[in-house]
Image 1 (cartoon, helix red, strand yellow):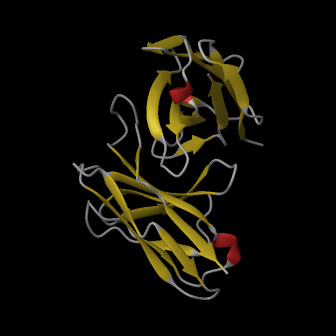
Image 2: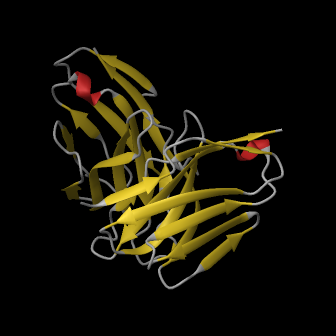
Length: 113
Length: 115
């Protein structure tokens, strides 16, 4: 069956450390993988996209990797801050239907001062 | 630009009632989407539209209907509300695939409770 899975447990880390979130997928062929941030009571906000032929993408303190052999993406926030606390969703854009994006259930990240 | 707007923000329905969730975007996006998000879960696609007059089913379309008469508006209709439709509903829009990011822009959501 097709699945997209993120860390089911919430992640709590100390301010200043690097947060690493995982997104694994099964039986999908994504052309692209996206990461979104969602704050409580709000809609998701797009952060980054990485293409299947890109190994790594960076934007300010964010870094995303994409390993199509392992079928996994890692999302890193370096020098984390309490303001980074939110739920982070990964999403697949498929070759078979680029008009439909498949979302994971998200990982809740808490950064303690 | 207001982006994607949704109304109402909150609604309580009785079982069997009907309602329409409104969604409007002012970014001239061709693609629009309706998702539902249950607590602790990801977004499930209900319906989507690739342009005015064109709609298609997503993963969980049962119990819902949509129409797309203009580029800007994409209302979601619940005909006979059931408790299983209690959820937060998000509308989103994007440029046509082929752009650089496939970025979806989301509205603030409608929290619906059916009792």
